[in-house]
Image (tube, rainbow, N blue to C red; front, top):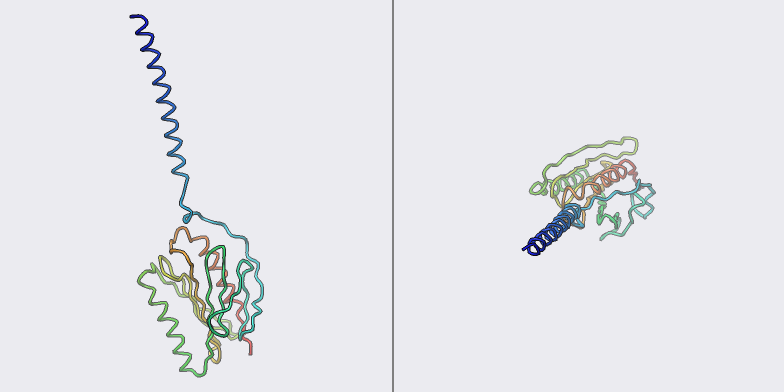
Length: 200
């Protein structure tokens, strides 16, 4: 009988130790699961931009980040400012203006494009800008939520030039995970607008 109780006590101790180890292992796994995040939700930090001059043959000049690359667009004077590590693009579209009526049409078309995004955009925030000394006037729109575009702007001299820009990400629009990249590009777009100059 004594041997039975000794075996029983030994078995209980062994079982207790085994359960303790299992509990530690289970807690460790849960902690790892809490820490691990899907790759698409990782928040990235980007380097401080250094801006350089846009030197392509076009009727305009501007500054863009050295974090990006310039690629040709589908038509003359159209270009793509490509951010490979962000999977983002700023599409630049240039349209020559031939009359005041033509300018009105282009502005309305730009505004119509923005309004079409209201289905998915949680907000649309317009901001006008004017640089009379350089004859640069226009509006920048910031779009929130799951809109296909995050920023849209148009700039003109009110006489001959009309330039639009649209910011797209080539990933699914997830506001939280894209926030660092969106903020980075917001500053780049502002810098781009502030440095636009027309080439006669």
